[in-house]
Image (cartoon, rainbow, N blue to C red; front, side, top):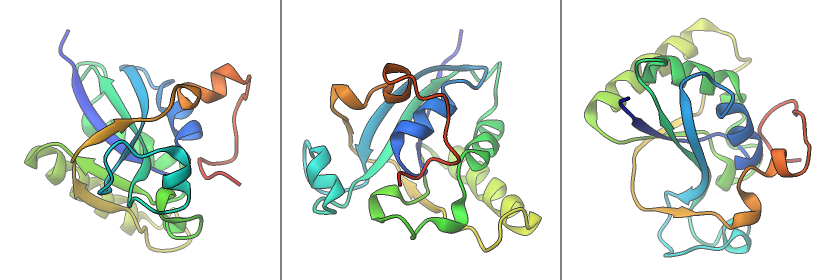
Length: 158
């Protein structure tokens, strides 16, 4: 089996991880911090917006079951990307691309989503090259499963 990786941020990583891990072809998910400048950031630092990091989900997926394009389309269904600035910088909708092919696919999907009009405003999803990734604390991993949270309206923490 071939395994590819994706790195996505779209609100609180608790809800995003819970939603992404149910997608057929997703093999593994991990709640992480990425996009900032501080080494080994803590949740408290990220929440205080002291590090520049976002809450994100790193995932392994089988491209023979789900394409990167289809994975991104599911990502956009999991949160409202037109609200990216509403809930704080650490919750910003962002696609971190791992190579130029992922970047091109992301640009195509973002353009398609934006012109579709399915969201009330223009999507504000950022597209950035992937950088250093820091695993979030253990209590954040599979948070919804650990706490019997069935679902929420979206991935933004309230």
